[in-house]
Image (cartoon, rainbow, N blue to C red; front, side, top):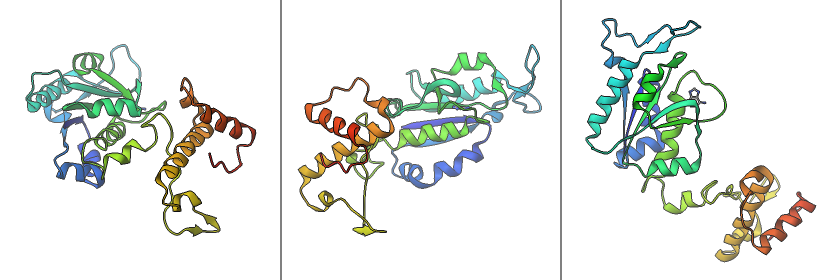
Amino acid sequence: MIIKVLTLFPEVLEPYFKGSMIGRAQSKNAVKIETMNIRDFSLDKHNSVDDYPFGGGGGMIMTPQPIVSAHQAAVKKCNTDKEIRTIYCTPKGKTLNQCIAKELSEEKHIIILCGHYEGVDQRAIDTVTTDEISIGDYVLTGGELPAAVIVDSVVRLLPDVLDSKKRYEEESFFNGMLEYPQYTRPREYLGQKVPNVLLSGDHSKINKWRHFQSLKETWLKRPDLLNGINMTEEEKQFIKKLRENPNEETDC
Ligand code: ADE
């Protein structure tokens, strides 16, 4: 996969893309991420990239030319005839979720546009973007953090980035539920014991326990995720018990 990020602040993003899991994914050639500085594409003699808003009001607006030129250069570098998904990071966009991340992880190329100052000239957005994505109902100073969040959520889903496929298939949101609780050594910590079933070596029992713990976590913390889910009789009974006594140890 190839990801190009158009930004006025590449220095903010680069350390993140070089480090940790994203850096490792790049060294394994699962993804190639390039930041492109929008300012480098300004045709203005002072290299300016923003101007006052028509109609008045405070703040500066990013001008369309450097963005459109940076986008054209990014598209050219991708060397494909296909339209490239170009995501504009904005609080007006669709809220990012695991389903969107999965869908984006299946693209060969993605371009991400980070806005800054008080906004981006609408004509630039209309010219280059195919998708608008928000990372939540709050306003940040720019699109760099949202771009890093999008890249991270997408790249970890690429083949061979996590240690095994199993890893993300079991985690929160993959099957529409939150992940079950996890434990490691020691077997007892501050008087709290690891649940016996996890020490039993009986994998079908463990899988069943994990499934019902996922259901419990979801019911307690994000009941909205269970709307419209068809439950088995056993799952319904489990929820009924939880409803009667949410604090009771539930064995399933
Ligand atoms: N730019 C500023 N705030 C944002 C948000 N919440 N999501 C995506 N892009 C943004």
